[in-house]
Length: 198
Ligand SMILES: [Fe+2]
Image 1 (cartoon, rainbow, N blue to C red):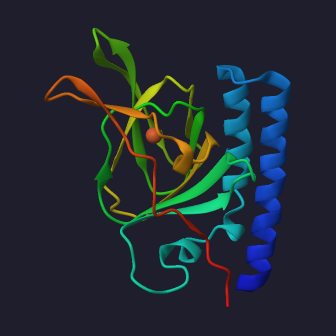
Image 2 (image 1 turned 90 degrees about the horizontal axis):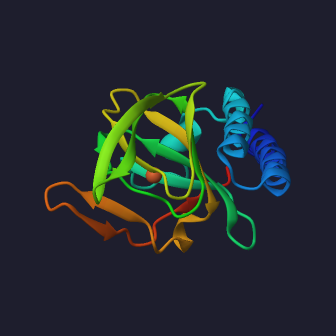
Image 3 (image 1 turned 30 degrees about the vertical axis):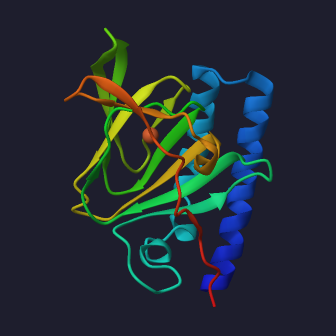
């Protein structure tokens, strides 16, 4: 399979997965149960390693190589059902934050530690953690909190999927433990489509 064939097969596999995910949400709504089903669809998609080789994401299209990049794999015309490939080759972490829409993170290559929190006394209390890696993921309701931690000793490539595209999310909040307050994340920018092979 050359790069063009792979790109076409990848789009088809992504479209089929998104169709299943849309059907799950339509039938069940947004619940912990439906998000687990959505997570399973993404874990299955992540097993198709032949369609998602690391080299297609490390520096697609050439140009300046980024330490962290978010590649759009799918988004409906109304910005719903946004699926991204998140590529990281350098350490990265985030503070505890919510998403305001459902979110599912599924591992493919490398390790992304997700810490999970409860709201407590106006702040947060850690309640658990999940290593997002090949075959594993986390599913988060709109109000759920997580933080992510990567040492990226190996390149990390994960699926991140949201009920609505990250560029549309203006109300996400993160917690600052030093000042014990909540701040808003600006909507994401700098997301790019995965370039077409030449
Ligand atoms: Fe997040």
